[in-house]
Amino acid sequence: MAGKLPPRPNLEHLRHQAKALLAALKAGEQTAVEKFVEHLPEARGMAPAAVRAAGFRLADAQSVIARQTGFAGWPALSRHVQDLRALEGEWRFTSLEVEGSGMPAAMLRDSRLLIDGDRFRTESPEANYDGVFTIDVEQTPPHIDIEFVEGPEAGGVSHGIYELDGDRLTLCLGLVANAARPRTFATKAGSGQALERLERVTAARPLNVTGGSAKDTKDAKDTKELADPSSFEVEMTPLFERLQGEWIPVELFMDGKAMPSQWLAFGIRTMTGNEMKVVFGGQTMVHAKVRIDESVAPIAVDYLNLMKRQAGTITRGIMDWAGDEVRFLIAAPGDPRPKELTTSPPTGTYSRWRRK
Image (cartoon, rainbow, N blue to C red; front, top):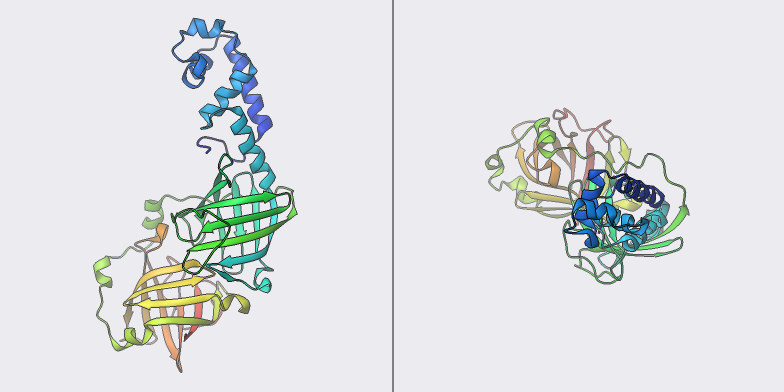
């Protein structure tokens, strides 16, 4: 596994690094000597003068480059980088299976995976996910570890396996952060795994795939309202009792954009006590504790976010009932509570649910 590779590693660039390192050694530069002593087994324990006189070759310099980036040797580094390059491009989903349930093909039409080096973006109607990944091609099947930097899963890591066959890519991933790595390309009910099959649209490097912008958790929280968790230890009122259980989305708008109807069938909202989760296609979109103020109109709702980077922050919203259906309008993080329910807010999330 790579530990210190640069973003979007390039094998030719790494070869140039090895040539430059060898030239620096021949020129007697102390830093080059130290790198050989630290990373090349044959040079370990040698005096600087002996290292300079040893006649090390380009293959030795390549071994130094590989070992200082976390690999056992140049061949392993070369295989790793070549596989990364082979993964680049734009990919379209041909099938998606979540915990044993296949998603309709129509649901996948507007989703794609973009890969540039070790950076990726997954775009779908539910949300966009940006991040970085590492692969281990020495395993059978090869391993992949995905670190989410932006999007609903920001701060989480997913472990998986993959198989690359030309322009066909198969991924089996754990849906729950830090869940056990799948062993086979299969899922079943309760497995917490997703099986994705993709076909490459183009091998060209996609534009503007940065992997997202990692933000310091403390700094991110400093810009938002934080809550005293004890203030969310609430009593079960008749309204809370009415919200218990599983709910199916009827409609959902995020920042004014409607979620396609075919995606709604794969969403669910669960309420246990005052702890709430919203999941779409196996991905947790919201996980929060809830408190409700029924003394105001419309009814005020506060979420104490429990998900990764947003953990401990508050988002504010309002709710009401439309017959047996419940509606929510939740402001974007850091925004004030909305004053009235609107089905297509410019920011924030509107949703309407019916009991499953």
